[in-house]
Length: 411
Image (tube, rainbow, N blue to C red):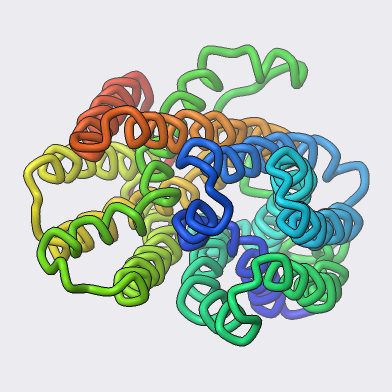
């Protein structure tokens, strides 16, 4: 099989599961339709991301045992089932059941399906790790764009804003579409030029056991670096639509709820595009600059962007800054697979990569819940407070990066 075709399949699979990043499109409509609070609805997204990260950690550990096909198919079955159970939860207006179905089961499925295409494509491209894994992970960001600007608005209109029906249709569609893609994933043939592992060499840091790796100072430092970059961006993924709608409403009080929702969906679509492109662009750039240098640039430039957001009143400027932040947010996910491969080597790549993705779940709780709490308790200044807290995380991440060195030299 041509390795570029495998990269295309991995990207397509990531686009399917990446639709979870369009959750902020549903944030306000669910609040209005069911009378739930910002915090209650945000917990759906937080629960999903938490179990996504746990599923990714398990998937990374079990990938060498079961292979990419079995794990990816299982993940898609759980992912589609999560939408179907979410439809039932919305029909019965049960928030706890929505947490369980869409959050726990669906999130676990996303996590199990996330690692196989990334790690598998990395095995096909030992010579272009950053470029290839960045391309595959780009699909995750693009999935949110397609969902928020095309699929979700179309289904809501066709199904008369019936959320149970919308979620049910999505569940069936993903089961039918993504399962064959997951089944097509496979490792390079034994003895091929791409069969040398997830990267080149044995890695710059060696550990006798997985436990020693996961409890090492090196792993902890990389985990903190990724967490700080992730928590800042994920704050916007859950609330960018409500935030930009508020700015537009301040500028023009005559705008209708439909117009405001359209502006919110447009920002989600554009920021998702930047999220996707950032995964590819920063992953490729890190091949030349070095992984740590790429992270330092992302963290420091986002720090400046977050401070600027505290003074922004224009929804256009807000949108530009959010798109840049999501560009760097995606860049972290595009850079970290190659960083892990360089650091820990081929044999430990899947395990270490899955474990480091627990930053995703931790950030998925801290970021959205912090913003939701501020919006419920300090509605007048919630956004400003959130921007400064995000800036603090980014500055902390930059300081952490000073304790690491580049694992590749400039090309």
